[in-house]
Amino acid sequence: KIFLDVDDIEDLASLEEYVEQSATIVFFVSRNFFLSPNVGREVAAALRMGKPFVTVLETNAQRGCLTLVEARAECARAMALAETAASDDTPNSLDILGGTADGQGTEPILWFREREYLNATTRL
Image 1 (cartoon, one colour):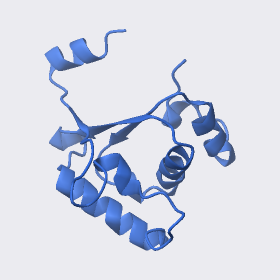
Image 2 (tube, rainbow, N blue to C red):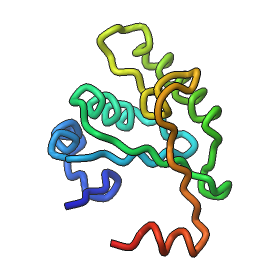
Image 3 (cartoon, rainbow, N blue to C red):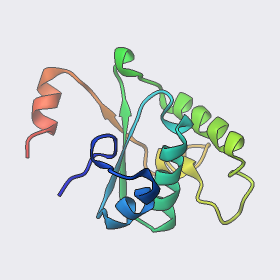
Image 4 (cartoon, rainbow, N blue to C red):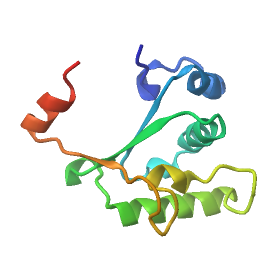
């Protein structure tokens, strides 16, 4: 079963329960992704619960593309605003972008919207 947070969540108060019921999380990162408080809750819950995840990075300029460097900077700004970066027990949202600000770990998959890529990647 697949659930899409923007379409399928009936009660935002239960966001962490939706994450808990998920086997794998796909984070689709586009501009302003990290500025959403609910995204912050979702990312923190997934990391805290040790959920496997895949991160996909938007590449289309008209759909909010950003480079990996820009995504990491946006994430760091959002964490600073939420004052979560200073807490040792709070999962670091940079983990979904390749580990750390210096780029350690698995990098996101780039999402290309060209018809051939869409047809190949959305086949079930």
